[in-house]
Length: 319
Image 1 (cartoon, rainbow, N blue to C red):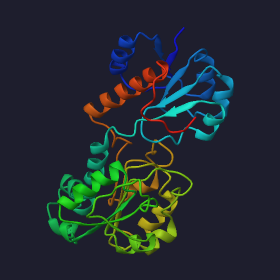
Image 2: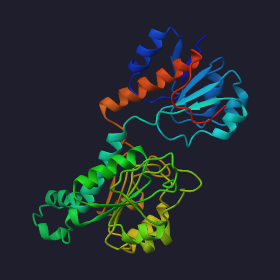
Image 3: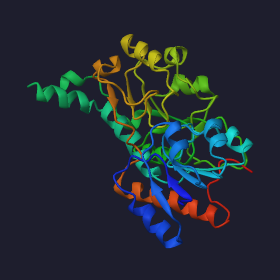
Image 4: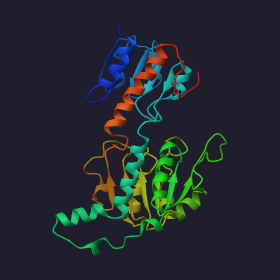
C-alpha cells in the first residue's frame, strides 16, 4: 500500500517527485482529487499526503487517522487548518523558499506595465492608434516611492529590484520589530496610515491571515494617492475586490495589478476586466520551469524526511 499519496496535484507530470521517491524506495501514487470526500475515499492507509488545493481540516484528519503529515505544494497554507492538524497530531509542512525571484519579478512586471501603461499602448496600437499622448501622464519611475506590504523573502527580493531602479522604498510589516527578523537597511518602515498616504506604488507580499484579510478595503483606498497603483502577487483576499472595483470606478487610485483573486479563477464577466488600468495574471507568479521543478523536488524530499523519521526542514506547526 502506498504510504505517500500525491492527492490533488494538477501538474502535467510528477517526474521530479518520482526521482526523489523512487530513490528513497517508497511506494506512492498520484491522484487528482477535487473534493475532501474523494481524498477520504482514495487516500486510506497513507502516512503522508502531498497537497495542492483541497481543504485539509478536521474532516480529513478524523477520517484518515493514519495520515501523520501534510506537505503543501507552495508557500501559503491557507487551505490547511493548522490548529486542527496540531490537535490530531498531524505535521504540516510547506515550501517557503522556492520561486522567490519569480514572484518578485511578476510584481515588478505588473508595476512596469501599469506605470509605463504598456497594456494601454498595446491595446491602442492594435486598434490603429499610434500616439503616446493617450498614455499621459506617466511618472518617472525613479521619482516614485514604492511601498512594500510584508518584507519577507519575496518582499525583500522585490524591494531590492525597485531600489535598483532608483525608487525610494518604504514598508509596512507587522513583525518589523521582531529581533529574530532581518530586513534590508535601505527600507524605511512606517505606520500603515503613512504607508498608504506616501506610496506611489503598493506591492503586497504578505501571507493571508486574520490580520491581513481585506487589509485593503474602501477606507484604505480613500487614503491612497489618486495617482497610486496597487499590486498583489501574494494571496487573494488581502484586497477587498468590491472595494477595489469601487476605487477604480471612482478613480480613487490609478490602477491595479493582480496575480491572485479571492475566488479563482476570475470569470470573464468580472467587472474589474473592463478597466484598461487593471492587469491580471492567472496565479502564475510562482512559475518558471526551474521553480516548478524546485517546488516538486522539495515537496517530495520533505515527505521522505518525515517517513525516514528525520527532522523536517519546513515545519508549519510544532508537535
